[in-house]
Amino acid sequence: MGTSTRLAGPRHGGWSGAKGRLRRWTPSEDSRPGSLTDDDRRTASDVATQYRRALRDALLEEPERFGLRDAAQEAGHRLVTALDELRQPDPPLLRDLHRAAPTDPADEVVRRFVTEVGGDGRLIVDAAIRRAARRVAERLVAPDGPLAGPASPSRLTGELFCALYRTFFGELVGEFVHVLIAENVKLAVPALMMLDPTDAVAGFVADQVVKVLPDPCEEAAAREPQRPRLAEVARDLVGTTVTEALGLGDTGVELVA
Image (cartoon, rainbow, N blue to C red; front, side):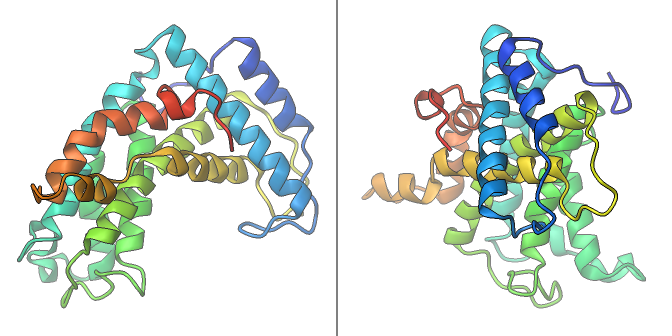
């Protein structure tokens, strides 16, 4: 299945309920991306939880469905490698940026990071992984990020390493739900409406997922006095992280927003 192939969603009742709730939701004209009214925040959060439950139930019925779990684990290991290199002197990601001219150095860093973490797979899940990788890369080159000036980068701190690790998996699930909605739900959005319901739900999915993920920094601290390398701890956690991100672990049983 290539990225142009329609991705069929789950068919059980939870999926139907999530689709129906989303179709019935007409956001307020006062809502904007990143600034929703209280009612719209509650609705987006509830719909996000319904979609997470539907995805979880589909994976419980068929663990290999969508190729999502294996792809997420493989991408997670690539992510750890990429982030760990940014904690070392002379990271490969930043070498010879001048040769990419006239491309902006920050844009080239984003491109390289997405290529390294996202891989070259052609499935729809791979597209979601690359979008999640782009979100992380954009954090790195943001004005307050360590790679804001790629020619004179700052070292990636352990705290940011752990934050971006968790962000990646949250964004991955959010982006995958975004694809499921786009491929299977027809929404009648008024032309002048500023808020895209699909974007809002995907954002809430990502936020909800991040809340239940293990933190490599906390795990590393718990392993004292062994003083393990942060990257080693993060690699050890990838399997558990993917399990929790997909709602298949103990913290995801009820999927509380």
